[in-house]
Image (tube, rainbow, N blue to C red; front, top):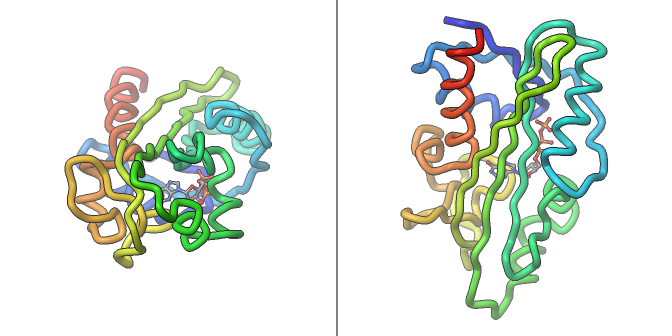
Length: 186
Ligand code: ITT
């Protein structure tokens, strides 16, 4: 098993990464070092900025991730502001904004950065399309999971186990690609 340091404060992300990467030969180790989340237009910029901060303090290879939910009818909101919006208006606020809206399409995006000391990070992207449910459903997962139904499923991420969510999710897809790339890299 290869150790892979994951710089994150989010234990939900760590659970999902651990579950996905274990069978692919990686053991995920959480490091909650903290880094500033710069206000930027894209997840990629946030991730790159995060890497440059962490590289100054952590002199080993690591991964970090920036993710967000982009809702079609809200022109991509909350997107890069997903964390702030979750802790302010919350799931109830999002459902209210979509009251009476029939076309409820949305996409979760995840950008992973893999960094080695002194090198430019490698970016890996995963996406999961779906819809915003009419009401909150389920108690699993974190963040927007109780209001997101991925394409091909009949229930929200909040109603899925970690394994099930990983089969559909932006994070699951990004981590699969990451594992393939790291096999050649290391
Ligand atoms: P880090 O320490 O890794 O940055 P975080 O929780 O701040 O953890 P992000 O900035 O990447 O993570 O994500 C922004 C928000 O988007 C996050 O707080 C969730 O509310 C939401 N989010 C991201 N991925 C999600 C997922 O798989 N399911 C539900 N909500 C998600």
